[in-house]
Length: 253
Image 1 (spheres, rainbow, N blue to C red):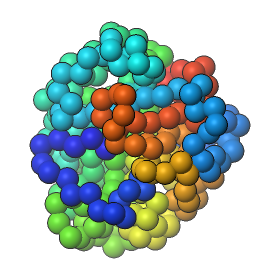
Image 2 (image 1 turned 120 degrees about the vertical axis):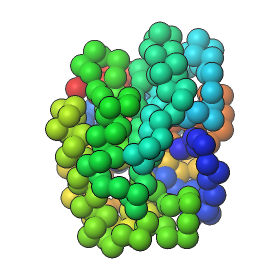
Image 3 (image 1 turned 45 degrees about the vertical axis):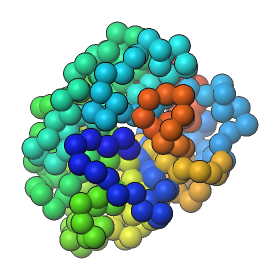
């Protein structure tokens, strides 16, 4: 994901990222089948990106002209930080005719999943059935602030933290969050939990490769793939695993 106010130390093993997508949207994602490589028809698939305060004032008409159909904008981190550029980025994307969603960067050792979800929803993560708003997203991955990659939580506690976050987002917005993570982190820090694959969308990121790679335990297909952290669009580069019509259907709930 695009980073904000603190430096992010990318590890070699963090080159394979994932964001989780709901099995409920199986019909929206290439028939629910897993794709194991960057599709030959990638040029025809909806492309998008994700941004944070690092991108500051994005030229949204230019992004639209370059083919962006969707974007995820970082809204919050932990229970204390809000992207100061969030409103102008989020609303600017909509004004340019780009589907947009908000994401939260999880820091599970700072506060509970419920607390962080509530903070997220209050500060940009609320979903609306307007046909332009993608489901809220949870970015959960290696700890960039210390060597405790699982934030000091046991596998069971991490699963419970994610569940609490998801339950609060669902309670407040009516939607389960997309989950962004890495396959290695997920299998290491949740013990390969299969508790979320049935109703959370998967957003897979794997850089420097034409292969989407092994998915986290439980998921059989990805909905979003973050395949590079640089390119024609601001921030990280992404594909949607379906058509433009299916992407709009996902935003519509």
